[in-house]
Each structure stands twice: as structure tokens, then as C-alpha cells.
Length: 117
Length: 114
Image 1: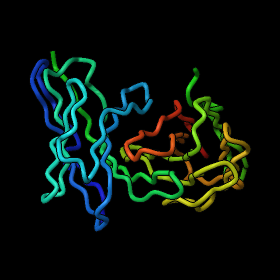
Image 2: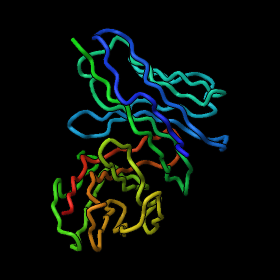
Image 3: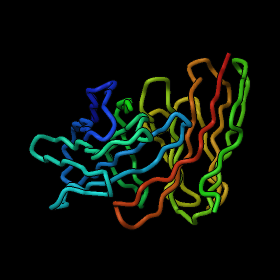
Image 4: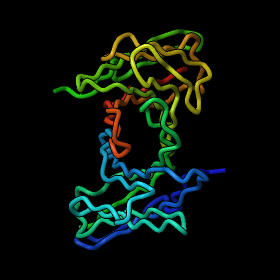
């Protein structure tokens, strides 16, 4: 069974609009973490935001915020005021376990976001 | 700081050939990781190393071996390459301590096995 599900293979948004990228996860571990990464066409992986399962507030980093709904097991990424440079693949990932400090991540299949001028 | 570096950037192998992908980080991180990314898919963990001298299997370890040479370097070896190993390989590293620490990724190695 998929542990991380990103149901939107592609999204098209007008510049300056807000966009929500969906992510649902499946785990029975009460302690987990959720990450969002951006992968531009150049291929590198860029960390955007982190949410821990015990965090009381939704995480925010600049124009990025994470809409964390624990009961629904969803961790959607919200990008406000989208820019042309936001066009990229976006991956949701979940920390599956920690072994002596190393974090085992499971990634979703990604959502390709295209910002139109 | 260079961050995480990987060599080579591109490689073409014939089925059955062997090769080693090199990874180094200059951030003094304890933990290092190898992932593969197949077309249209997310990353999958191959092997990881929690600290110098330790390595452990991830989700898709078959056909690979790893060596944590020292704190800086973590190599991935394909002993007998197969077309199914055609992929982009990413190395990553992270600090230990806070669970919120992100993994820093290298630029990737694009490997084609014919």
C-alpha cells in the first residue's frame, strides 16, 4: 500500500494565484514527520518545509505553508502568490523511521506544477 | 561550502558492467543516504548510513552495495549492472539530533544501462 499519495499528477495555475498541492499519508507510528521538496527542471532537490506529528501549529516558511490535518492524514502544501519560478515537481515525503539519527524517508510520486503568466 | 557532490554526472554502462558512484559532503553530517529516482516517480531509498562505519538497507537494496569510507564519503556500487537500474541516483546527507533536520541532496547521477 502506498504510504504517501499525491493525487494530482499535474496542476496549472495563473501567476500570483495561491495553489494547494495535496498529500495524504498512511502510518501507524504516532511519531512521524512530513517534508516537502521542490525539484526544478534542473533536477536538484530543494527542501521547502517540515511538519512534525506533534507540532501544534501548521508550519510556515515564507510563501509556503503546510495545511496539516492529522485526523485526515493529510499534509497539503500551500504556495501563496505563485511565481513563474515555482514551476517544478513537488514531492511530499514522510519520515518512516529513525535509526541512530538517520531518517528513512518515503516519497510520493510528485505533482508537476506549472505557473502560467 | 560545496554541500553534497556526486561523480560522475552522467554514465552509460553495458549490461553486466560494474561501476561505483561517488558521493562526498563537507557539512560534517553523520548520516548519508542513496536514493534512486525512476521516470515519473518519487525517490526510493537504496541504502543509508547513520554514521561512519555503519550501513543499512533501504527500500530497494537488491543489486547494490555501499561503503561508508569515512565521515565525508559514501559510495554506491553496482556489481553487475542491469537495464532495470537505469535511473537517476541521488546522494543526500543530514545532521543528527532534531527530527526536523532536512536532508541535503547532491545534483544526481544519470545512469543508463543498455
